[in-house]
Image 1 (tube, rainbow, N blue to C red):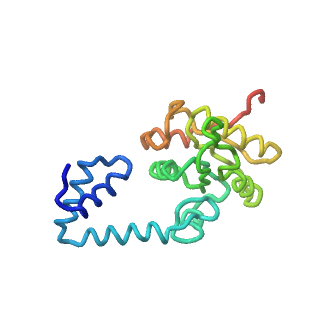
Image 2: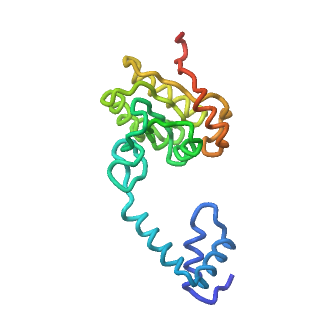
Image 3: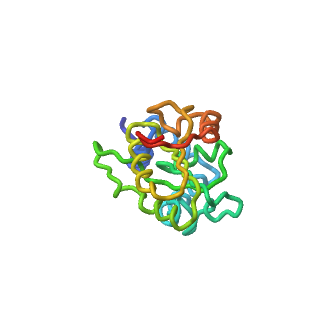
Amino acid sequence: MNYPSKILEQAVNAIASLPGIGRKTALRLALHLIQDQNHKSEILVDALVQLNTKIKQCKRCNLVADNDICDICASTSRHKRVICVVENLRDLLAIEDTQQYNGLYHILGGVISPINGIGPENLYIESLIQRVKSEGVEELIMAVSPTIDGETTIFYISKLLADSNVKISTIARGVSFGGELEYADEFTLGRSILSRTPYHQNGSN
């Protein structure tokens, strides 16, 4: 497409670089912002600048936050002895949307995947182990995607905590094997959290 303005073309290219947005959608959004009479573009720019410069990572659970400790970790109404372990922010938000869980979280930043060059040292596993030891954690709910890499990650963490008294459980198989948590519906995911089962390593009783 030949754009009448280089500025418009640059805006379309920038918007289209976002995941899930094609060039037609990007053009429609750019034209909407041009015709905007309510200063939406200024509000958007300000929000994006703050997102890039002011947002922090919680020092305990790795969730995005406005302060060093996120609102979930700082909440006095949360169950402090239960940690739900997830791969990423999207999975955490999906579980929060179920309103069936009231404990804390720990974001790993992914799962162990040798084929993709991701080892334990690339994830927030060591900080999770330290939290279990220092915070008196009674249960870890392993809410990672039920894939081979997810199972490998659960097994690795359970081995590191084999000498501790922490209970390790996994979400029930309402989420199909190989599925992604963020795409599970809220009812299924909520039931999977509530119906979690104890995790047993292969060969254990």
